[in-house]
Length: 473
Image 1 (cartoon, helix red, strand yellow):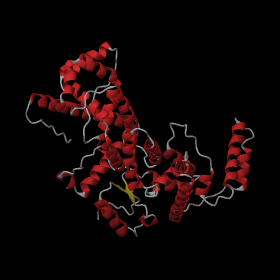
Image 2 (cartoon, one colour):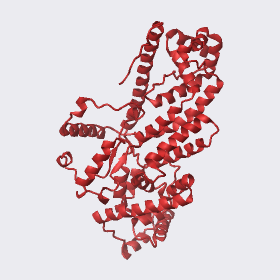
Image 3 (cartoon, one colour):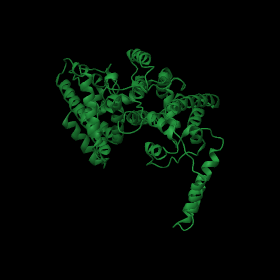
């Protein structure tokens, strides 16, 4: 009813998390909107699972294997952050050791796995300070001798920091991938496969590791990965199409990636599967909007060739005509735009300023049907959550106010946000990223202060129950 009211006559994809109720909703929408005007391939690929949510589930299983080394480093950070005097002692040792750093120690939070990464990322820079405190600060040593404080783990040693660096390197892959998937101001569908390829390769490498912790962690992650994505066969095929529609990768990158992970046999099967699906998708778009491509006449070609005579740079004109000649040569035997596109060489991946949407806009005259297909596929979001909530392992709570918004109010809010962003200069993107970074820093500062207050309260509460501070928002 809402879609009809808003004038939406077709749904391309619906990105949702993995709640079972969402599966029921998808099936209902597939049934009632199957015959709508804008439906493509009878909603075969309507369901898009939130990739950030799946990464969070995979990471959650891996974190169950947290090593004692991480626990010791975390407790050392908690000790320093628990009072101003301890923090001052830490600072004075830093100065004597000549360590200069603008980074501040941050505490990890049980319900946010990225906080573990951020905690390790800063703590490992101060390894020498923590090791020196073990010799110079008597209260630090006595704190770890008390089993009630540290659980009998003891203070961290050099090997603990080394283990944490290994674990932190693996966490960083998930951290960066989640940040990319939840980015609101750039295309995300074509970045999915790059991140998955790197993560899968690292998981496969760690499964063979001699480190018992990393091996167990990677094994659990692999099991969770295959539960949702299998060996690539459970992933929505549109995400593969998005890779092919990236002129820097095309089908060659898919074949390379599949062969590296699963071997040549699986790679050939998956490439054929993606190729067949993409051909069906292209045929569907061709039927809806088949452009009339007008080739240059003989007189026009003669005029173009005659432009060489008397032009300011005849060599540039010759090169331009030669490029057109090569393009025609490669297109011989190609029956449609898609075959011509795939036959052409890939664009260079060294161009860091490459914008995929800009490329398709510039080449829309050359590939009129394929560019419309790319416009829709590349617009598909691979995540439904903002980066701040993407790392949370706690339950998602929808308050009564948000759940009672009418369709009209939702429409007004979405449109207002879109209009405000549309009238802001391009620098808005940079400002938005800076604002998100400031929000993350503020969130960590609030958590650190709250945890410090909780630690101080528990220290003064000798022999009594431990004070707990619960920070939900």
